[in-house]
Length: 243
Image 1 (spheres, helix red, strand yellow):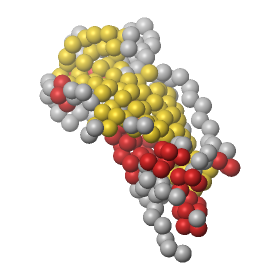
Image 2 (image 1 turned 180 degrees about the horizontal axis):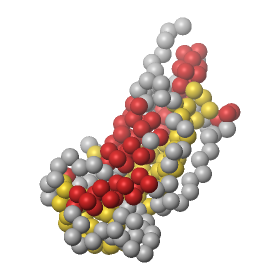
Image 3 (image 1 turned 180 degrees about the vertical axis):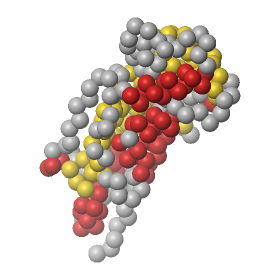
Image 4 (image 1 turned 30 degrees about the vertical axis):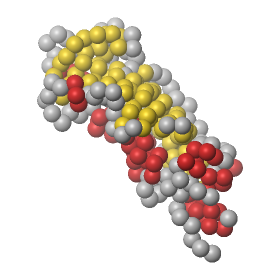
């Protein structure tokens, strides 16, 4: 039997990689006082924000990113040391994402899988979650979702000199703007000045969208899909070849 082409799911990988590259965004502040004073430097604010975010037990990441003509919509809830669940959308495609203990499950409708390049596998995936693990080739970016501490650390580490900007209301809290090398063209990170110095929002350059963090320390219940709704990548390939 002629070997069929492996379903081309790299598009989703790129979507997640692009979305996660903006992790530095908004959130709900709690607590009576902020550790950020008027004389706290920009570098100190960034460090405090990174520490607070990594110490949180959970958070929600949601927003819209526009890159290379594509609109990426993210709505993901992270639970520390456990995983993430939510949706990732690009154009008219939407994927459900669940990652538990470094195993990922992706689900979408037939039209989305077909558009993503699943070919014959699109019909096989209807009503199913495709299962992906650390050793599934080509999906390393998706598996990065399973390590929010690493993502926060990477996202809240500046490559250049950090500069303080204006203070304004963002998502209902007073927040200070931080930029690299004093240029908003590289994006703006807003850090809460109320309660814990959580990151509040990241605004991309010009019209590239914005991503917010909310629901800090709100528990996320993560549940793996039922066994009869899961199909492994290998099973998908075998079924597609036999079709």
